[in-house]
Amino acid sequence: MSNMDDARVMTTIEVPATQTRFPTPVAGQAIVVNRYGSAHRKAVIIHPEDFDLFERYRRIFGARVPHELSLTETAIEANRLGERGADEPDLDVASLDLALGT
Image (tube, rainbow, N blue to C red; front, side):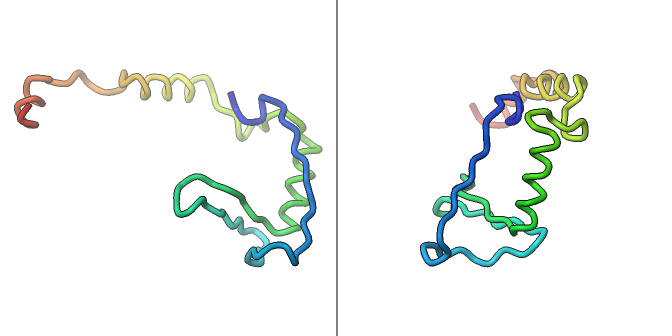
């Protein structure tokens, strides 16, 4: 299920600039704020013009996923096969055990 399938609603809140210490964003660039160096995103800061564009896209597409961002059935099946390891040839377990010393 894509993020847009669950029909979440985006809300915005305004915070005075005097209460933040964010870098100034540049149009066309997203600043990702990570949680203490991990890969977990805590926030993403974008330029006001990019946010306006994002809002326009939300009004145009609503909860629908644009065709360009949707996955084909073939891509979904390829992902399933990869997750199951079905796209890998059978392993010679004995040779692998010997190589790993197990």
